Image 1 (spheres, rainbow over the protein chains, first blue to last red):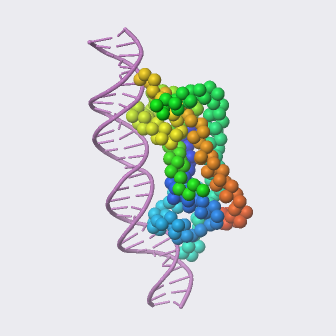
Image 2 (image 1 turned 45 degrees about the vertical axis):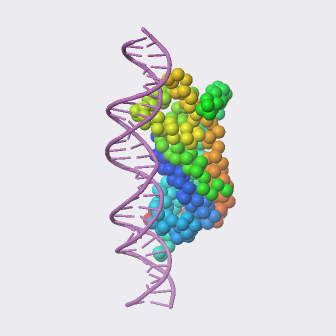
Image 3 (image 1 turned 90 degrees about the vertical axis):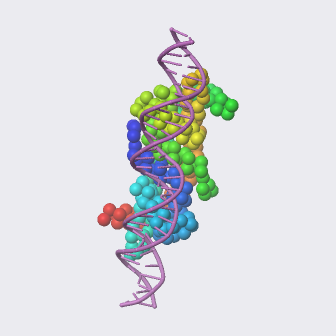
Length: 113
Length: 113
DNA sequence: ATCATACTTAGTCATGTTGCTAACTATAGG
DNA sequence: CCTATAGTTAGCAACATGACTAAGTATGAT
């Protein structure tokens, strides 16, 4: 299932940037305005805006504008597909672990040669 | 903790590509040679090699060369940091869920206006 | 020794990403 | 009305990414 999943790609890509992860962590505390989010990053507003767009397109945050202020908040369930994929992988990987174990060990040793 | 984590960035970035995810899934079944991995992707060898390098640098796979054949295998524990980060986030996010819930709902509605 | 196999390396190309500045729009406050 | 605030848009530069071809190296088979 989910052979080629654009949603996962969007999510993983959004999470691959440290600035975006820090924004998410910040938003986990409380919703915030764009300026509030930009401040601790040391980046300019347009740059942060772009990061917010990426996060929003991945579904990780939702934003709304009230007057001239845009407020951003996390969408907690957005991480579900990631967690699901991870669980699926772990299931498969662990099922094969027995017969892979020796193999991997051998490879690891060889890799460090 | 892990304010700015290059390891997480490497992992998430490696997982953001569907081809790389399909390679991982394929490797979950059994170790495989580079050619075996390239075949189902429809991509050329050098392209697949690059993907393998990304996966290896992220620590997701280990490879070794025996004669002229390079064999690749998954490194199951490589996903641990991802899982840990996800769990951390969920913990924070869910802790704030009560007071965020109304807020998010409002934002979601507004977003779809 | 010769030849096919299995990568590997080098170099190109188009596109995407991340940062910036400058200039613009829209709203709140005095 | 005027001005500061909050965001937005446009456009640029530097570098990264993902694909390719062409040519090289190393190894197994005959």
